[in-house]
Length: 144
Image 1 (cartoon, rainbow, N blue to C red):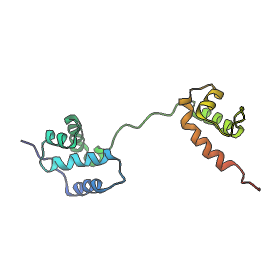
Image 2 (tube, one colour; image 1 turned 30 degrees about the vertical axis):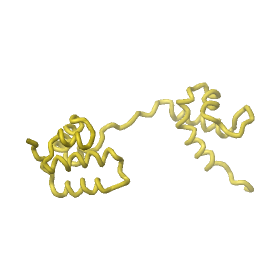
Image 3 (spheres, rainbow, N blue to C red; image 1 turned 180 degrees about the horizontal axis):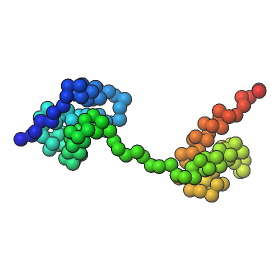
Image 4 (cartoon, rainbow, N blue to C red; image 1 turned 90 degrees about the vertical axis):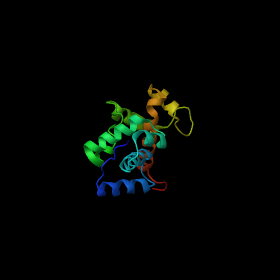
């Protein structure tokens, strides 16, 4: 027999709004759906089966909701920390984009720039797009 999860009416309204929202990340919508189904009296196993997730996932979000309310439904992973040399690397990349490639081509590829700077092309890739945007905004308009 499933134990019904107690959800306040204000929280229920918020969770239902989350279900209807099409612009939220799917993981947020899934968490809301897990809580609402448990509040309807469905078992953890049934919710896991219907939503095609592990029972441990259902258990995790139930426990967090019981302990912290709606605030417990937000992911706690903050993402990767910025490397200590990122500002210096971004400055080097920006300098390269202003100079242009030495081989006469019209633009930098991530691999070409990585070779120029002596870094992995995987390392310089995310910064190249930022540098292009900065270069475009710094460049004077033609005719000025």
